[in-house]
Length: 354
Image (tube, rainbow, N blue to C red; front, side, top):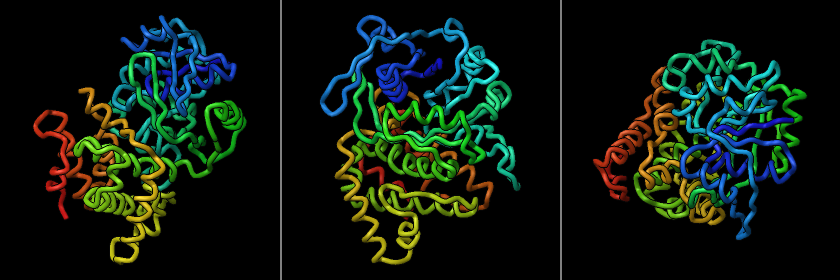
């Protein structure tokens, strides 16, 4: 089995080291100082205060790698359209592509039925290049829960979380899904899911709450859960998202440690609001002091993917006739931060509507 990881940054590099050390034939695609460090000194992950290092096959040219059986895409969503033609050069007739990045992917509504059947995302795949060249039939969806960070070129720190969910867009359990699930178990607890669409929205909800809020406040993951204003905004963001997913008929798991049924009741019942906040605080005690990926991007001066997180929620809600003023405000504030028109501060909560 030949595996390629396109985008061997924090998440992709973490996957790569684990899979290589499990004895699999893995090639990594990266660029810049991170790639040069991998070539010179190898790739290291720091996990539970222990270092694990490998010397990976790595390159910035996919054309040199040949045909692959499985390709993991772990890039930022906005970067993918620009490399699709290169990715397609690694396809054989049976190559499967595993999308392992934040946000709702371009293939999400493939054969879903109803009014959104085969709906295309202009904001995610503006020229349909992913749909045409990758094709949704090749896709296996992956929901990634580990939080990781590149702390220096060639070195990745694993902060928390270790599980993965894999699923076919159709909800079927297929031989190819069983095969890659078994191999990915070398990285962390991995399960197949028949509720891939619900799990993707669950992860999107978690990202929508924590990623942008960390960026525009400067708070870490655990600090947000300790902050009363952050918990209030978390409930507002989550409730808007649940209005969308309820309309879409999806079943979501816990969001920020809070079951979705408690989230809904917290909107109108103070006892459930208190319970939800206590669950958030408890969740914060288990996740450490790391920062979500969008906040890491803000610190490093990189483009932030808020359009693919809260921005997507706003766009989809508008189509459904659902108001999302809090998610809309989060997008606006985060873009001001990105353009250096605002500084990260808890005072930015003042720009969030009640």
